[in-house]
Image (tube, rainbow, N blue to C red):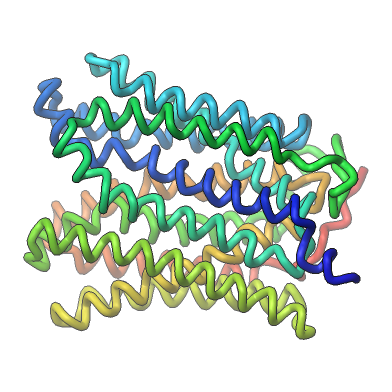
Length: 408
């Protein structure tokens, strides 16, 4: 294999950068409503239950449209499916700034979920097509870094801009400016001959996916990793303020720094995984080890955070974020290799559907446990157990990380 094949073509590198930028915008857009929650609640006189519905409604369509989006990514050209989804979710973000009723905001959030549901199936198709195995770890790590930087930027800058200019201008400008991403995306779409793997359409259906043990291993692993991540996104600020008694400003700094640690962990271990494979390590050993150790490590570090004193707990929390990034760097590289060009979209769609049910379950379970016990400790124990089960899924349920021999 020549050097360019190992690194990917210049056009493929541009695609990877744009996909990482799309992931960053994706996570800013899905999290901006939580930043504006108090302002929006006061202005529109929303009840706490209505606000809770708005905050969770994104996951209703995002999760349940994943299989559909996976089929679309496999059936049609993923670069155009992603462009359409990006336009839809950016438009929904911009439209949110002009809405004045609960029902209209709910419709916009549901539309945002539909638009963003195409992202990961299309990422999988584009990376599998244009990036070789030895470069896929770092390519996926850049996308995972975008996942971490999105909430960090939203936390650091979104709140300040909303406090100064209001939440409505922020949503409108963010949605419209985000659409500028489509210009380089459409201009830099690689020609067909730059593909590492040819685009293959058709192939087995969902029934054959459900019969494959590794499918369930990747779904279980992602569910556990997402359980930890969505706990951090939804409940960590409340935990830091109410149980650890940090000020709002300190909480924002700790949370933002945590997301940056997630991004750094993803980039570092994505690079390490590719270098390890280039040095002779098998994708099975490399990718399963990094994903499994990262998932289990994140859960155990967070459990330690709940038991430690204030200073040590912050250190362990930041290390847990980095471990989450370590896991995230190889989650989708495993799936892309196993699925191959024929099934990447559908496998990713199914995995993301089941994995993102954690976005519905984790916040609810945590809330019930905290209400019942009055503390977060049991919630941290549950999260650590789920994270360890995710680690076991990566290490023992997933088979060899090589393309499945699909029946035609």
